[in-house]
Length: 493
Image (cartoon, rainbow, N blue to C red; front, side, top):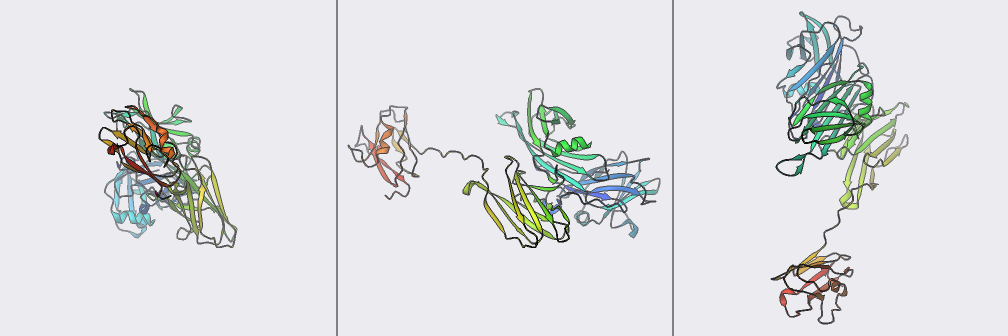
């Protein structure tokens, strides 16, 4: 397998385009996958099965994968073949049989490839499936194939946090770890691509651990000690692959001298093939896992294929069987500031039977929406889909402060049902009371703060009624600097 990969130091933002080649007549099976293309600024993957150029019916001689960034930077690759290794790799735009000259000729070496400065045209041809690869040995072509998507690609982004501080300021270190699992029916081993960015000072190692941040070390990726970015490719077996898909793995960046680390759980949500072998998409910062299961008029069933949204992670598109025929647009909207709910909107362009399933991976809450066969779906606008918003921070208590110069502010507007905190920093004893003096009956709740000595604070009662409450210092009622008003709601009773 040849993997070409490029990443960019965007401080926690990783941008990929994936390409793979299926060589000579070997088609990938129709398993769960995800299209993540250049237009969406996120990974797009393909797998290459290398078949013999001399005998297309013979067993595959190897496999390759290729990874490019979405912003058309350089890439690197890795190739795995049986038997004698090739000595040359040719990359063609258009079928090699058409003649001409390869777009790129590279020495095979140990299978690692560097591709620098690919053109925009080359990226477009990759996206259109018009790039071919050949491997040669001693002047003869031994394998070749055309760009195809793999039968399985899974992508997850993990935020890292923990107890590592960043000197000289006491801020906590953070990071992001992107993991891409690259599987195919024709390949026994899974390729795991990782790209972890962080601001841990003097990082000593990076690891994937099983079960918890302190669990058993499963894989070590600390090959660039002290670097703010650690990236590469690993080959893993099916057991480790399943552990990743099931969310059992944690990414850990450590600074062992201080005994500090940042970590995060990998794969709480996967874009692409998930643990149930369905095609899923993760929306709202990887929080909401969304799948669509369909049954068409011919009674063929399957998992709709999503198009990854990239930077716009509120919205995803789905197709059932035809990559040029999108059947569903779905959005998960953060309405927490509006009605304390996450909303689910979607609209379909099919009359096939389908079921939309949206799961909040933080709480396990699931919503399902069913469209019966032969029915054009009505647009769904579910504004109460998930009552799983973060707990609201309490509103700050409105405050009046007594200073040597008087009271500030002299006018304060609050909502009905609030209290007011009165802070005495004037250096003398004060007693803020409601008008009129001396009976204080206009807004009796205001009187609850009582006598305040220098440095003391007190709360009024709850001011429920919309009105304007004038106040003064009962101990010095003629001091104009300590007069003012509190406007409750509109101020009109």
